[in-house]
Amino acid sequence: MGDAIDLTGDGGVMKKIVQRSKPDAIAPSESLPLVDVHYEGTLADTGEVFDTTREDNTIFSFEIGSGSVIKAWDVALRTMKVGEVAVITCKPEYAYGSAGSPPDIPPGATLVFEVELVACRPRKGSSVSSVSDERARLEELKKQRELAAAAKEEEKKKREEAKASAAARIQAKLEAKKGKGKGKAK
Image (spheres, rainbow, N blue to C red):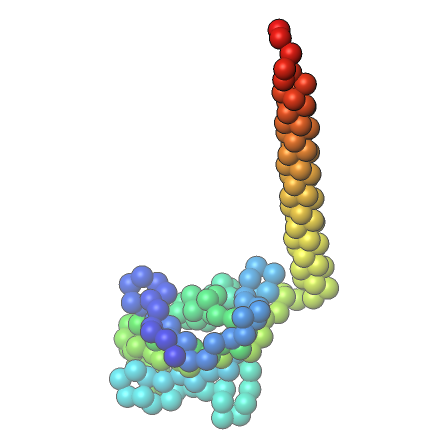
């Protein structure tokens, strides 16, 4: 769908979007660090599938930034939104390194994952309602800012109208004085 994006600046984690998310889709964040994904991992050299959730239609869940997955996933999933499908190519230093993960992943292997971000959730202990409350609070602040901006704009308009009215009155007085002064000697 698009060109590959270098997420690390050194070519270590490359992302190519296969399917875009909806524009209003949510993304992982501090308040939504738990992610659910579908994926299929292959060896770049051979194309051999070494792991997948697609065969049994399972979901793999983890917390971004907790160190529970390879570095490439922590990097790449932060850039995704729910519903997005991307191909993530991981150099060994962002995957299993020079040790690999025998027997499935040989030492120094570059890995390719097709990943779909299925959902983002809050940590256990922080409630969805607190996340919803925060969203509602932010929406309320946004509305308040919009109302304040509209009121400010209305005040500005009224000041401009008052200035124009005052200028018109002054102009009318000047015109009246000019008219009265005609024909009189001073």
